[in-house]
Image 1: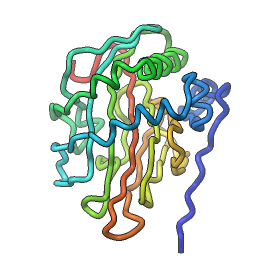
Image 2: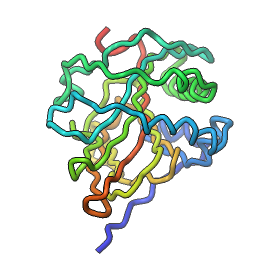
Image 3: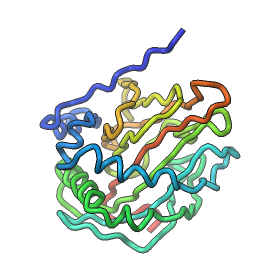
Length: 247
């Protein structure tokens, strides 16, 4: 029996800010993301191409080999973006019980991606959404390109479980799924019983979260065909006021 995927409850582009303000959650379709970023599918696909070169994550404490990633940091001030010197990714145990308290040094993003005008527009555009939600200010941005695969038979997009990230805004772009089942997104009120579940499948659709108000997780993935490698690609961007975690 095939499990039915729950469809994402997309909001129209002109309802994005209202949805974030009311519920702490907003989802945009790929078509609305393209309109928001003033771009097309070919340009976004070109940005995604570098995911094929993500190096392995060597910090997984569960011993897994299922995650590949890079990490780079930026500051957005209005319509200006600057990359900061390469730094470790650090989270307190309060927000990541599995990998918190560790300085995790990942390889930086490829220079060609960071120099892309589309990459810069993407980060600045999301900075505008963060400022409309929380007030105009500089935003400290951590960028995490992820590939979760089924090398171990199962891949865990969020091995730490349901969590908050300790930031102000979280953006999760679904970039692609290949030969997998699972990977359902689940978002719950941080201080209440309400929650939603849905499966992001559309390349460059977007999940936005007001991190203080919700917790989130993604269920494990498995191969559609046993023994045939599958994968799930995402881009996670976090926006935080008053500095990076660990400063």
